[in-house]
Structure formats: C-alpha cells, structure tokens
Image (tube, rainbow, N blue to C red; front, side, top):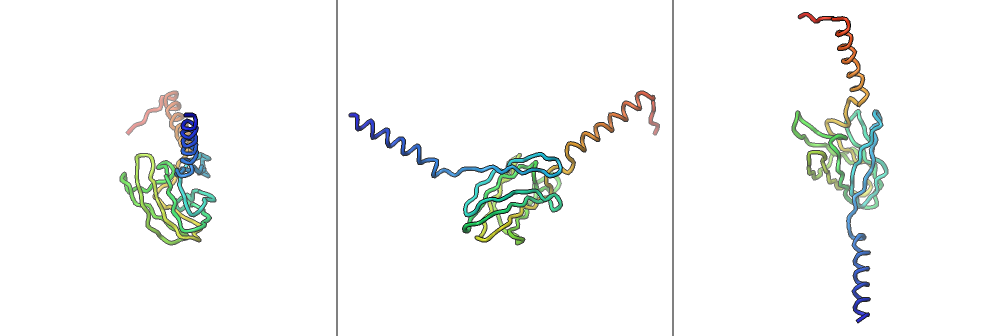
Length: 167
C-alpha cells in the first residue's frame, strides 16, 4: 500500500515540476521616456531571439526593438497606449512595422489600454521598429504644472487688482 502512495507522490511531483518548462512565460521590459523619465512596461514573448533593448524615438514617433536572433522567430509585444499608439482622429489607425528598414506584415489585437502586435522575423534581423502616430505624451507633467501656475497666477492677479476684461 505504501508503494502506491509513493508512486502517486512521485508522479505528482514530476508533473508539477515539469509544467513550468512547457508554459510560455511573459517577460517585461521597462521603456523609459527620455524627456520625462517616466517608465512604461512593455510585456513581450519572443522565440528565435533575445531582446537587447527597447527604446523610444520621439522624432519618428516609434518604438525601436533591438534583437539578437538565433533563428527565424516571432515576437509578441503588448504596447501600452500611453506609450505608443496609432490614431486617426479618435479612432485607431494602423501601425507600420519595419524590420531592418523594410515594411513587414503583423497580426494585432486591441484593448482599451494596450495594443498587442505579433511580428515574425527572419534570422539575422537586428532592429524591429513600430511606428505610430503618437509616442508618449508630447507635453509631460512639467508642461502641465507650468500651465497651471500661469493660469492660477492670472486668476490671483486679476482678483487682487480687480482687473476686468472688457469685450
């Protein structure tokens, strides 16, 4: 009877220890906004390569992913809309994705807070660039503080001096 209990225990232990080896894990890469210093987490899954760096290019409104490939593969990036987005007015627009400068196709899914792109790449790819219409807020928190102080100063000054606007 003991050998049955030991066998069941052994099978359970082997099963529980081997499950994580087959599960696909999600990695997180913190992307720092160079102007405000704020950090955004980009979740990703990758096979056939490793990610060396993910950075923001504010001039071209893009996210640049530097990769070191070992074979053909794919990467799935979950991009927070607060970090990068593609909009035409108030509706979603299409991202452009470049691999070493050449445009490629990709699959996309969307939520209210993020857009997830799955991009296949050939061995030898070094750079994947996701181009949107906006990347991180153009006006950071410092601009908001300056605007708030200016408006508040005008309100206080006009109240103290009883300055009236005439139209």
